[in-house]
Image 1: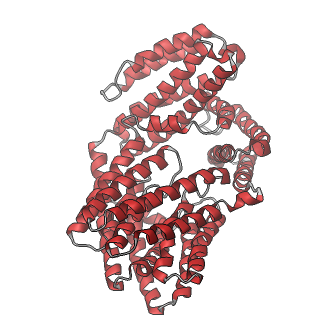
Image 2: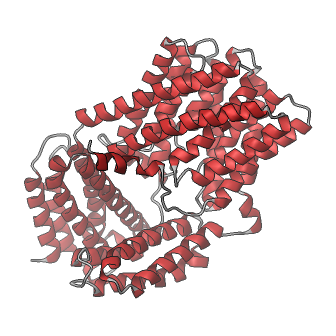
Image 3: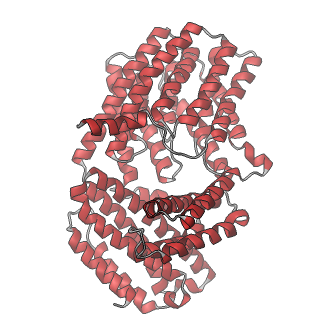
Length: 572
């Protein structure tokens, strides 16, 4: 690696990435941990019991940036999962290897669900952590009812604080997202510097997508729908008028996509059952990430056990933390590097905490403050967040387990090395053994299947009844979501394996053009009624479905079949 490449790789450690404001998320997380710690202490519970509440408070972090109506589902669901994870860990008391296996399995299931349902980080990490902590606490004689009961108090705090804006009828998340979109769209519309137009357009498009997602998740279309629709129409119109202008990325195909998305994105998320069913189709990025989590968690935990490490679950959980969010190989390697640097500095910070020897109330204040800082930093500088996360986790661990502090610090350092090392091996090996072009083709196949449903609706005139139109809108929403996912997967695989993926990327872009062409037709009553044209396009699309996606097939052959589908739709 050249010096410039090394500097570029390490730059995220010393810089702050742009990101949305997280002060309310950080405040909710801090209050959610502070309330039960304070309440249980005042109620007379010993310190090691009071800090068990943190095992349930983790639920407040799931869907933290989503509108409150979505949090009303995700936080209780996460809380129930965390309590179940604790129960499994407790059930495996005095069976450390069984606990490692359970931890890896629980992390895998949680990661798959959060990935497929687009809940996002922290995915399977805290579920894995709860299995390990529950097992360690029960193995050292802690009462199972006490562990679960106090953790349940933490879950209640997470729900109460995590959804507190509901009680005031607030739509803060939606308002912030819509206002940000308005600002960025206006920036794009008024941009005069040719070198800045493309960047401002991409920023506006991403902001509109976030705003629509927030509004539909929050079920607040009545408040923001008209405002967003007008703004999106202005943006799509500006893109259409700029074809052939200074923004070289704007083509007729892109203008078509933006025009179609202005209506499509307002339909919201697809049904959860459909999302899970699609994610379970092998090969898929969802399943690939789940396999990485299972392998990394199991191997890292086993290695730590073989070294007779008292906190073997840390190694497994850290390995999970590196691989559970997916992304490009480079992004995962950077995450490993940042985790190692952050932990090393964090261990020094914890040493300073030990020198201060804080009392119980001071420790509570420290934990609350650290939780706030971690949530403020986590999306902007991961290494810096880990610096504060390490003394936070070690302070809680010291209070809960009552183990020797030197043992805790030593285990944390060793487990970080094991977890990061195993995660790196899993990322590199899975990348070397895998076929990135197959992953791209698999996600493109999901687009084809969704496209087939929409074409079937139009060819068979299913939209003539209210029930048929409702199903058709669901199919359109599914197609739009698959188009977005396919583009993201294609971009990531292209970075990991440019030579193998490049020919298929061209095929994927043609498929996306066809998908948006059909979505545009669904909103045009005249085109929508051209049954014969849609039937012919669907018939030609069937030729692609006749070939198994797991079998090697030249990109040129698939592209040729897609050209015939495009010709059927356009009549050319």
